[in-house]
Length: 155
Image (cartoon, rainbow, N blue to C red):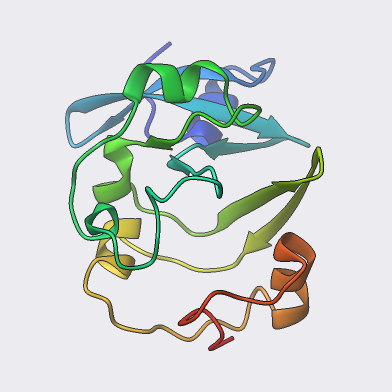
């Protein structure tokens, strides 16, 4: 397969692609990542968090640095395990929408966030609040069951 820059790009090259690890190439750098294929759409796994851990708490430096986390073990199970993960793509991957999922009681709920950015790092690391109209507060509640953590109730 030629160099691909997104999971959707990989899917266009290989229409029979199923969810698996794919190497994406951004600005000449290779990033193995989990590509989740859902209803003909390819999604790159950028981060995976376990809410029982403190790794991704609101004030932790992981949001404002380019450090990676569990590059091999984090993508091995795709989206279906609790191994926390932060890809190198966090700071370089441009996006036009985000797919967010949360598991509770053995069930995972997914929503899509219509948002664009040059990278998650560029939109998160500076700590500046950015208003979004999608997803709605009701959609966020579908994920979390509410209430929100402090500082997350600006929706």
